Amino acid sequence: MKTLQIVESAYRATLEEQDDTILWMTHAMRGAGAELGVLLCGNAVSYAVRGQEASGIQFGEWQQTQPPNIANDVAALAAKGVEIYVVEEDLERRGIPSTRLIEAVKPVARRNLAGLFDQYARLWHW
Image 1 (cartoon, rainbow, N blue to C red):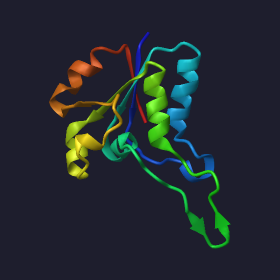
Image 2: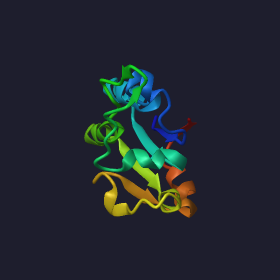
Image 3: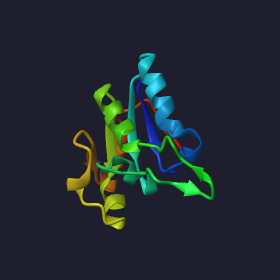
């Protein structure tokens, strides 16, 4: 049964865990054989941007030694056969050109979301 993970909340727990919780869970579920897709919308569209760099984060004496690399996590999901989509209008609102996206990411217009949703038996919105 195909499930579409809709990720809207971005950078949830990435300082503490170095991974987005939902992307991590999607990796684990795909590894167990689940049929999954991911739709990035809202602030989470930034996950699909190539070449992000989060090293150098420091608060007082504490320094993040294992910074998140969400773009690589998204690319690894695509390499596992997970379809990755991003809402075009959310990219535009944030000034992100489609030329900056990870190669496997598929932009989808908001007006076409119903058709995308119809391809999946379950929708999980995070």
